[in-house]
Length: 417
Image (cartoon, rainbow, N blue to C red; front, side):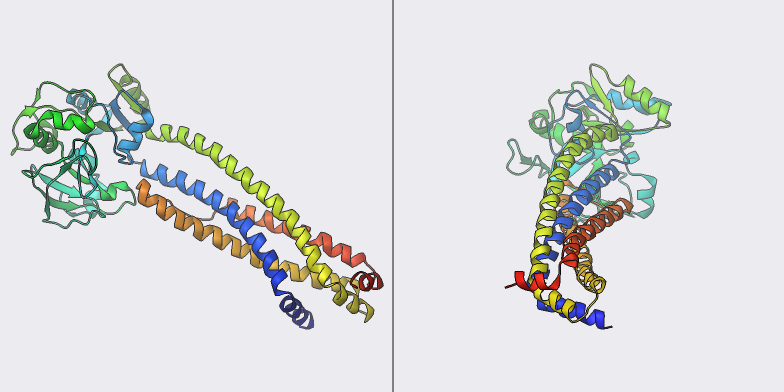
C-alpha cells in the first residue's frame, strides 16, 4: 500500500515530464497501428466488394479500369461488346449464369445499371423489399439510394459537368424493389432492365450513348425480349454491353472461360487476380510506410531514453534522500521502474486507441469515396506487435533505472547542486 502511495505521489510531482513521455510512446504506437489497420482494412474491404464478380468480360482495354468500372462503379469510358457474346455465355453449359452490365445513365449522381434478373441473387431476393423488375422501365434500387417503393424518376445521361450530359425527360422509371444493404457502392446503384437502357438511347439517338460510354459502336438489330423476357418493349438497334459478369459452375470452368474470351475482341479476367496486382503495389507503399513508422519509432526510442534519463535526473535528490534514510536499492529500483511501467502501459493503451479510432475515421471517409466498407479490427498479429512494443519499451526504461540504481547517494546529491 505504501509503495502504491509513493508511486502516485511520484507521478503527481512530475506531471509534465510524465505526460510528455506518455504522449511520445502513444503517438509512436498510434502511427504503427494505423498503418497496419488501414492497409488490412482496404485489402479486406475491396476483396469483399468483389466477391460476387467471379469473371468479368469486357472490351479490349485496361484490366484495372474494367474492374474499377464494374466492381466499384467508377465512371469511365468502356468499349462496348456485342450482345452475341452474352448469348453464347448463356448457352454455355459451363456457365451457371451470366449478367450484362450497361453504364452511362445516372440519377441524383447515382449510377443506373442496365442488367438482367440473374444479377440479383436469390439471397438478395429473399431479403429485399418489393420485387424484381418484370416490366420495362421498372427499377430495383440499392438500400442507400433514398428511393421508396413507388417512387418515379427520370435518368440523366452522364454526370453533371461532363460534356454531352443531357436529361431523358420523356423516360420515367418506377421503383418496384429495394435491395438489402451490402456495404458496397452497389447500395447506391439503380438496377434496370438492360432493354430499357437501349430503348432510351435508341429514341434519343445512338450518338448520345457514344458520348460517354461507347468507344466501339455496335451495329445491327436484336430481339431484346430474350434477355429479360419483357413483353412491353419492341425491337430496336443494339447498342452493346459495357461488361458481362459470369458465374462459372466450377473452378475448371472459370479458367476455361477466361481463356476462351481472351481474344482479339474481348478480354476476360478474375477481379480478384487484378486486385492481387493492385495489392502488390499497395504492398510496396505499405513497406515504405512501415519503414517511416520504424524510423519514427527508433527516433522515439532514443528520445524516450533521453527523456527518462532527464526525468530520473530531476528525481536524483529524492532518490538520494531515500537511500540516505535507509531505503534498499532494489525497492528504489522497483519504485522507479514501476512508475515507468504504469506510464508505458497507459501510453500504449492510449496509442492503440488513437490509432484504432483514427483508422475508423479515415476508413469512413475513404468508404464514402470508394464505395465499399473498410472493416477495421484488431487481430492476433496486432496483439503480438503491441506486446513487442511493450517489452522493448520496458527494457529501454530499465537502462536508465539501472544507472541510477548503481549510483551512490552522495554522488547524486553532489550532481544535483
